Image (cartoon, rainbow, N blue to C red; front, side):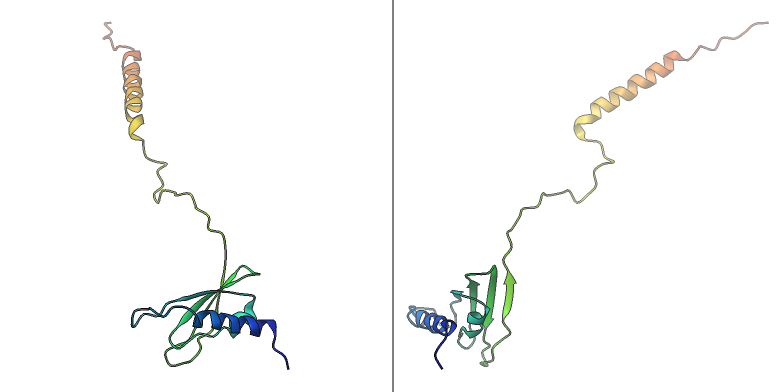
Length: 131
């Protein structure tokens, strides 16, 4: 039975990793970032003991994370969706509807003082009535 295109892609990615320089400090595993054709190619991608790889799907908006534990067991393939990041407007955590803004204090105080003065002078004066 012949090899498939996905087998070829998996073999090619292994060859690319084998040709990478190995000047990595001791105890530090360089993360792998690679492109794959589809989910099957991500499943076939080989990772070494204690290593993980981030695999970007070329045809679909998915990113895969494939990892192998230090004991040699493959961890389940994690699939992530690529979604566009959108900035959300920042809303205040406190509802400020019932508060007065600092800029409006002078206007509100002046209106209240004027209202009280008008009320005070508009009342009829109390005169003693003599019989």
